[in-house]
Image (tube, rainbow, N blue to C red):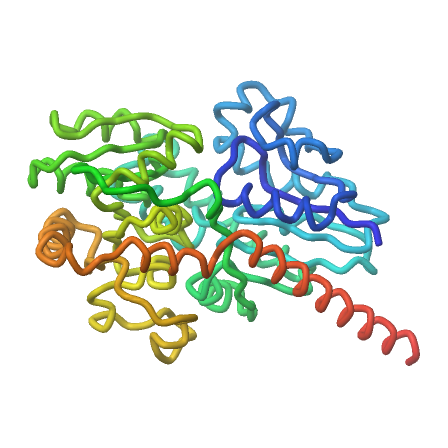
Length: 398
C-alpha cells in the first residue's frame, strides 16, 4: 500500500503538526505533500519523510506571507501529483483535502475544521472594520469562490474524521457529511506537574482574531492580576499595546520553557472558541486548572465546575457521554468572549480555588495522551482501509 499524507503547510509545530507527527510514525514510508515547507520548522520525525511541495513554495515572501496566497491555494493543492498512491490521508484545516489522487485511491480526511476563514470564523477575520479599501470588495468574492471550491473538493473524500464533536457538527452543517471523532493527542510526557503553582495566570495562543487574546488582556487589566501571554501572530502589536504593567508578553517559547510556565501558573486562561484546543489539555497535564470560554472544543476537554449550566456539544445527549472516568472539576467556564464575563469567571475561580486538585487535572488530560491517540488512529485507519477494500471487491464482482 502506497500512502500519501497531505498537510496544508509546514511552517511550525502547532497542534496539527503534533497530529501529523503521529501519522508519520504510523506510516513511516509515506510521502508528505504540502503547499510549502519552511526548512527546520518541523520535528525530525516529519522532516525525515520525503516532502513534496507545490509551486507556492517559490513565490516571493511566501515564508512570512503565505496566508496572503489563500486565493491561489485551491489551484496549488490540485497541482500536487498523487497518482499511484493507494491511501491518501489529508490532514486538513484549509485546502489539503482538495488534493486529487487516482480514482481507485481511498481518501480519508482528518479534519481540524472546515476552512475557518470561509465558514465558522468569517466575521472574526474580516468583520468589524478589519477589511478596508479594495480588499473590502475582494474578500467576499474570494470567500464565495473558496466555499464553492471547498464543497466540490469534498466529493473526492471518502471519509471524514473530525478532531472534536464541535468540528463534526461543522462538517455536518457546512458540508452535509457525517464525520467520526478522533481527539488529537496531548504530550503528557513533556507536560507534567510540579510542586505548587505561581501567582500568575497564563495564556498560550497565536494572535489570530478569533483567539480573543485581547479579551484576556483587557480582563486582566481590569483585575490587576499578573498575566503572562505566550505567542505571536497577526494581532500581536495591537494586543500588546493594550496591556498594562501587570501583563507580560513572552513571544513563542520552546516546549521546555512552556512546560515550566504551565506548571507554575495559578490557572490557564482560554478566551476564544476553538475547534479543539490543545493548550488547555497541556495545562491540565501539568496539573493546572483552566478558565475557558464555554464553547467549542473546551466543552469536550475541561471538566468545568459549572458545566451543568451549559449545553453539551452538538451530537451529544448528555455530559456523561464525555466522561471516561470519575474525577473532580478541572476548571470554570464563562459564557461569552467578553471582558466582563471573563472577569466574573476569574473571580468565581478564585472563590472556589481549593476545589481544584492537580491530580484531577492530570487524570483528565491523560484521556487524550499521545500513545492512546496513536493506537486509536492505527485501528481507525486499518478499519477504514479494510472497509474500502471490501467495497471495492464487491463492486468488482458486479
